[in-house]
Image (tube, rainbow, N blue to C red; front, side, top):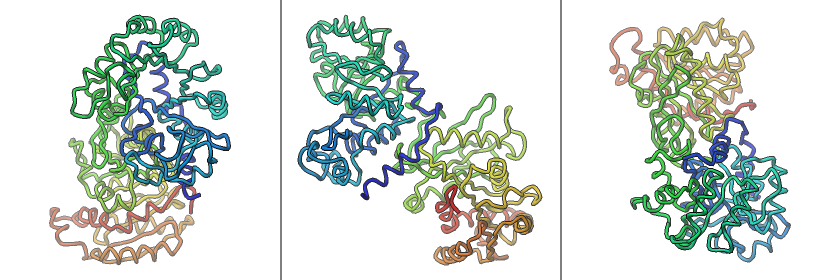
Length: 563
């Protein structure tokens, strides 16, 4: 049973919306005259993964495939699984025919990845595969000889992103992509017959480049439906075979494109996506909507545009980012001292970087969003929207584009960013699961809505504004019913000591934890970074606080709807 849990959790967390990526892909697919090349990931992006697996599908989503194609087998208890072979031996730790095992027996097996190594990924049923791809990628199913069963499952699911490939036309309302063998009997008549059923695409297969029906077939199909060609091996599209990275793809994929193919099915998704992105021929996900590709394991600078307003931001995805898994999102808002026209500045600050270290990501892999502001976030913004509104819309955009666990969105910020985080927490009370508030303050009487929020507040006692400001705020929130656990500690303790303190505060069971760093204990090297004046301790406290692992790690234990 232990293999069911990851799939169940992932499927439970998927959200269906008309704005999801699959809807835009369906619109592209429905346009037979469209020039975009829609990449079809054959069995998912199975390199470094397992064919037809949840992991391979996630990789295909992340790389920007438009469609993932899968094969089916039927179990002893009449269930369909997404599986290539009729036997279990090659792709699982099990042996024998698939048809001799029940679904639960197959679910108990671990899969093998493409090199034969055992991996802890379960085999997916077709029902699970439909839910896992819903809203993220189109799913092509090779349905024969199980067409009737496939039709029933698709209809029951209510899914509109499933494309059935079968010899016979599926029932009304189910999308169809037949395969026409140009080396078969009377292929042009076959094409004219299938066109009457309005397929979303037709895949052409031909063993040799000089097939006598190829030109006529392309002419008949042009402008009437999308044309798919496959390059997994020689003989599917003549001599046109997948290329490895570094090999000129133009004689293969470029030539098929010139013929009229606008769907290309491949086992080499990464080189195909690199080729399409370079030619600006791919679907919207070939380049992310923000304009720049997002490379997992590093901050990438992008710009969010809405009407006449714009907001630069820096985005970090985990090194092993998987488009199917759900990740917490940390939103870091910088201080007024870092307002700048340098769009990458926020990514260099400890409040953004601390979440992305190898140690932190190993414990809590997360997506980090760090907007870069050019004006005060609590005032007016560039364009028609305030910077605060833009930030909220940016968060919503990132949630739609990437695999964010929307029950685990966390807000954090320093000084101005602390104040904006509190403001967003009040104006959108369901946005954040919890917040880490660093060296800020607001008028207590404006903050009634914070009384029941999960907050971890940290300031330096040498901070002449934030310390008295947070004292007043927490005292006020207590009068409104908030529970506040407080501790004053030195600013230079070991990580173990900070964890011990955090455990003590957490044990109090209050929704607000408030920590002040004792006067005179900020490290001298941090104080020396800033010019003398009343704000020295204020500025010097930021990095010190964000380097305390226990305070950051507390956030990841918080989830919406849980006390």
